[in-house]
Amino acid sequence: MTYESDKIGDLTKSLVQNLKNTGFWKRFLFMAIFAAAYTLAAAVVCTIIAFLLAHHLVTGKTNERAIQFARQVSAYIYHVLLYLTYNTEELPFPYMDWPNPEHTPSGIGKSPES
Image (cartoon, rainbow, N blue to C red; front, side, top):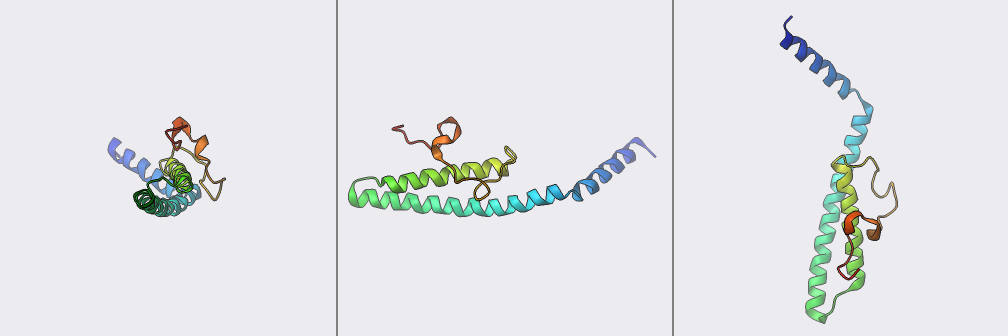
C-alpha cells in the first residue's frame, strides 16, 4: 500500500465514524429546524418593516410597540444565526428564554436613542 491509499483509507474510516455519530445527526436536525425558523423570522421582520413604513406614512409617527417587537425578533435571528454558524452550542428559543435585545452583544438590537 502506498502513502496515498493509506491516507484515503484513514479518511474513509474517519468519515464512516463521523456518519455514525448521533451528536452530528442531532445537531443536523436542529440546524434544519432553526434554518426554517430563521426563514420564518426573517419574513416576520419584513412584514414589520412594511407595517412600520405604512404606519409612519399614514400617521407621521413611529409605532414603538412594533419597533420593540422587531428588535426582539432581530435578536432572535441573531441567536439562531450564532447556532447555525457553530458560534454557540446553546439552542435558541424555545430551548432558552426569548432573547432580550438589551442583552445582545455589541449593542445589536438597541435603538439609536439608547
